[in-house]
Length: 420
Ligand SMILES: Cc1cc2nc3c(=O)[nH]c(=O)nc-3n(C[C@H](O)[C@H](O)[C@H](O)COP(=O)(O)OP(=O)(O)OC[C@H]3O[C@@H](n4cnc5c(N)ncnc54)[C@H](O)[C@@H]3O)c2cc1C
Image (tube, rainbow, N blue to C red):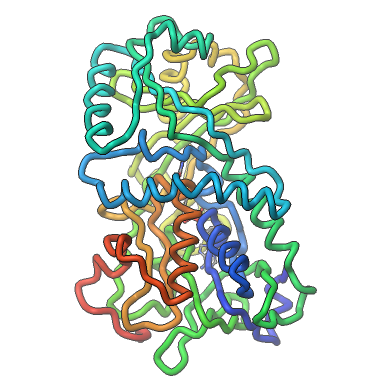
């Protein structure tokens, strides 16, 4: 690990500088390293942004929304990549990220919820996605603590899960295993390391992006710079003039609870419910805890930013109403929730865009710069696919399928070189 103070007098050279160490930045850094590139991953609070809160559902089917066909294609691509990505992590000796392929159960509380889930099923099926109805009896045979009063149950075989905190830790360990000695230069052939600082600005040379200026002094000189700092991407200094990254925070409250031994497992698969029209989910972890989430609010109930710096706030105060709603609705589906021990309530902002799709790709005409942000509700699912897309771009290959994610799609003017 390289601390900022060590970089003040020396520039770091790397093939790739990744700004932002959330799940997206870590996956990009690892993919770049696997392709033989040296990597500097810059973040002074790695893994503490939206990725800290995420439930880790890998859910292209349940997350289908009307008129988001382009996003669905990317979500299916991402979902298809997950098994190989997880296997590669294991082969590389990474600690287990808690990747599980147990099917998801979707359940409704009342007749209106059943209608809504069946309507959604029609849309899912029209898009070629598999959602199989179960009787309540069948669902309860699998999950004995489900309420007998639920109105319907559906099995979604393709929706899986990972533990995002473990995933970031796992990737970090892999990257640091390739870290050269602190203070040494990355030689351009191998190596990857974490720089504990913030990016203050993009560094420009001869009209192209040549790396990153660090907040506490020093620079990273890199052939490719990847802006992957989530919600904060828009406030990074030195972005190309005219590049408009319309990111907004959509806050989510989420809870972690311990399941007493006599109730384990509370549920064996992820249970996604609609309770009187309001979504709630329970995601079981292998350590005997369960995650219950998540609200979605844009009320600006945001707390101090802590280490996260200026710009839109990604850390937030937990909403009392949100906690109440989550516990109330989860109990409707699984009454034993009232017997759990509340360990943690967390709130973070999802980095949202106007069309809910990420800002992912090169900025035409600007060498050395790739944008990878705006992953909103799907960053964990999408991260391995985003990393592969970035690696292709660095290899000079552009897959036309992802044109709709172009980071310039909201810019009114053609982005020019460095803003002044
Ligand atoms: C409650 C909740 C539940 C969610 N559940 C799911 C889910 O089940 N499945 C799913 O796929 N997605 C889920 N998401 C969405 C997911 O968390 C995000 O899409 C994802 O974490 C985005 O990752 P990221 O790396 O882009 O951003 P972040 O995790 O926010 O990381 C950005 C990083 O950039 C760093 N940074 C900021 N500015 C700078 C700078 N100037 N220099 C250096 N570093 C900087 C920050 O410190 C931070 O570590 C959920 C989100 C929330 C809030």
